[in-house]
Image (cartoon, rainbow, N blue to C red; front, side):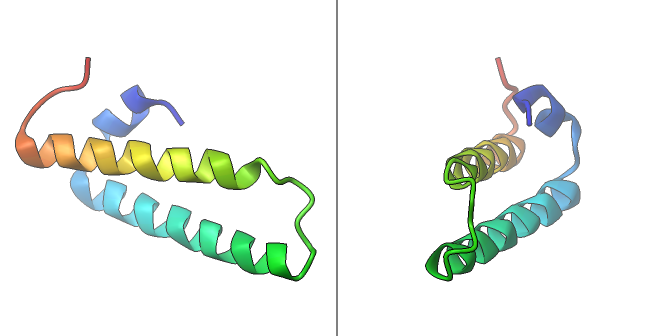
Length: 67
């Protein structure tokens, strides 16, 4: 997921995407405890996506643009 893609989306779309990514991370954590997870790096990518989404949301709220 690229920052330019996120800045083009609306606030409700970003909020829905954020909820989906958080749910994905939650499911991944439960899979990790149950030893069902094969890809350990998936959590790192999901956390970075969540951070990018939150940054895009905060920029929209503040009214600034990404560089």
